[in-house]
Length: 456
Image (cartoon, rainbow, N blue to C red; front, side, top):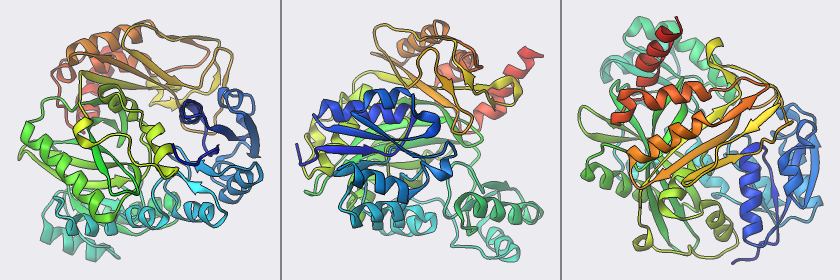
């Protein structure tokens, strides 16, 4: 183990609990930064100390780098774990930590900066020899966008250079569609990321979203932990994730792993990261989308099939230790599937459903894992993302994992708030999903129609 003694956890919810538990497993003390809305949460109970970093609004607390760095420094922490979301991929925040003598548990600031600009990330991927989607540099006007799209070929997807999560993203099938959405895309990107710069890529309708988990240290070691399929998405937000990716040719799987490591080695990446690809189902070809320079929501499925604790490896790498294993030691066994449990109402267009959790009886049993911060009686506040937990099932085969997860959802009792549990159950039972290999458009183009027809 390296030199870490006390870690400041700059996040909330289930990932804060996950990081605290990993720190404790490594013998590291924790301090949790909480907003006024999270003072009584499970994370505050588990950490050695909790310190309020601001009001309930995220902008004044979890998105306030000065308050977080000051709290970490004032409580004697030697490192900070940003979790995911909020400031996890903010280069300025990572730099502020370094300037105040606090280790940022993640990549170097310059790496975050490089990967955060999607246009720069495309250039770097091209230099590394990673397969790319046909695309453009920054487009500064509607006319330029139309000219580039005409040359590239339709359909195209317009994206925010500084973005992610579907914000500032629009699909255009012709020049008129570009003219209709370009200004809206730029305004949406500017509002979400304080940067309205746009670029374009060819749009592939029949594609899967497959990502490769990587880890790298400061001693020249870099490994992949296999891939995850995250194609079940709604409005570009992942709903279900699984490892390994089903119905994927071995040659394509090997190419994904190889491409991910090419990029990691080319940029001298450090800590945990995820290299994301679109897999063209018609051509059997993967193309790089982006690299996420942080821990992912869906990391548990990779942990279940590899037996490797990714967060503990993050802590060791940050402390200066080499990876505790080599690529040859990574053996994938069985199959794992994760459902995101959200406090939302599928019947009201997935509107958030904050409130008091009056009943919380999660399933338990062989091969099940629940990552959550919720306890019976807890209040789900209206200020943050609606995810309240992740239910993961592991089994020797995908069919067994599906059956185990479906039965577990049936046994999951939550009252006081609405959840997406019944929707997740319908998703897992759909014949297309059972067969495996659905596209990124399947949930909205097929599943939603089926669910709406049943409800009608």
